[in-house]
Length: 143
Image (cartoon, rainbow, N blue to C red; front, side, top):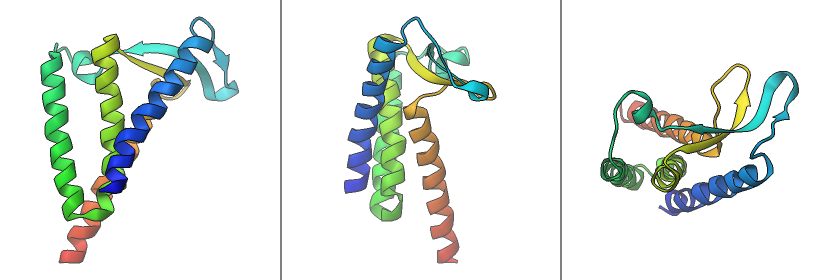
């Protein structure tokens, strides 16, 4: 549970701190990363809005709390999921807070070969893949 709580607190703090630095330093400029892409401020909407839905903040927070409770229960039953669940929850919490406060999500890494992303996106991806991997490993061990 400590790993879950650490990720839940640390990821949003780091992500929002990086975004503040980027907003102050790159507000109207771009830093080229050679053939890999660039660093720049990209304001994006959360995926629910991109799909045409207009969720209310109450819906976003309700979904987040249900997911947080489910992942907390899972990491209690399967402790190896704790760090990954913390990363997943921390990244999604950062996006939920930002959506509530700014109305959008700030992305700042824009590769040539992939959509723009930020630290919270990386945490969500690593967390989701880690949780799924740990579930598969535990399931196979139970057989």
